[in-house]
Length: 275
Image 1: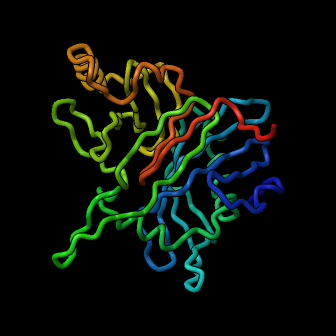
Image 2: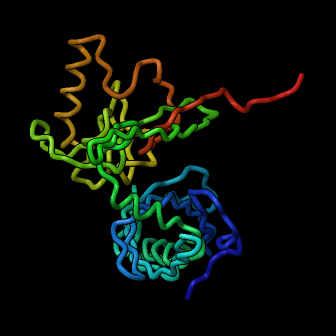
């Protein structure tokens, strides 16, 4: 039986969206990424964070879920009717009963927040090629330029914009023996522990999915040591070389990932208007 706090089903228009567990935990689910859509069954994956009762620091994870859906073809939207979490990854060890509670909370809460999902966006996400940001599209002997304006992202804390050209495409790097995101100029790699690591200027960031959310980490797995060594060597040999982050970004608080053309505008705290 599903037991959620009342605001778990309150109207939420933007992602991430929140689920409030009966145990007082608040789960923030980031925008789902579809794997497949067949009839009224949608398989998706999503990153999430959990803040437990009495704590302030979020803990991150990801899940894959199979969902029964209802489609409104007039409004071109899709809503989740039921959810079954197939697999769940978490950033730390969790007791079996706590993991089961977390899984049940996500399954119960996902239909409550999974409404008004753009059907066109889901289809485009599944069909999108690796390229697409500001590139020319050739059709029938003509060149059509993609003139979609970049998304403007505002941040009130020191942040960095990490660009991925469309859906993250993982490809084996034979020199490093690991899979990396091939359609990004940034060093993003998949470790054998199932997590994704962003590296630059001797700083590591970890996320449950290639597109984030990323959290600063003082640890990196041993299978990423060759990637680290090569990047560090390149930095030492060529001062002009920029791997993913410049030294002036040593105080980065947030990693902002975009899979479409975007610009990041940063301020130091809130902007105030007036004389």
